[in-house]
Image 1 (cartoon, rainbow, N blue to C red):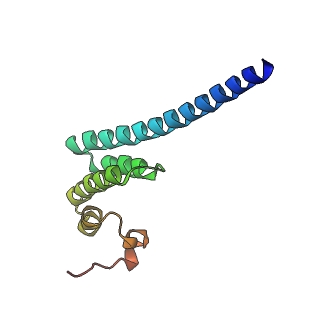
Image 2: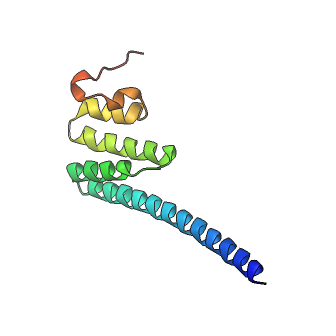
Image 3: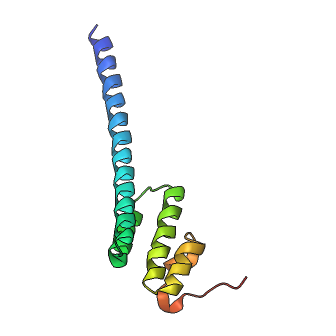
Length: 113
């Protein structure tokens, strides 16, 4: 009987740990979406620098889906374009997952098509 109870307790503990992990991931995703929405609101108000900052916060969160990242990069590109940061806006809008994103601005090259 004690062995059976121990197995049940272990099973419940494992289930609880899995639920907490899923909840943590959901909360992280919620924070990303919240920052993205705040960035969009800042853009509507004409606060483009604030919008870029909020988008940067959202992108700094680990384990964000590529779909969400692409949307945030696109929105950040619009904010940068409104700030007259044309090169950065194009980089964000055209290929947010390119390897050149990691390069410092002084060594960034524009690909020809």
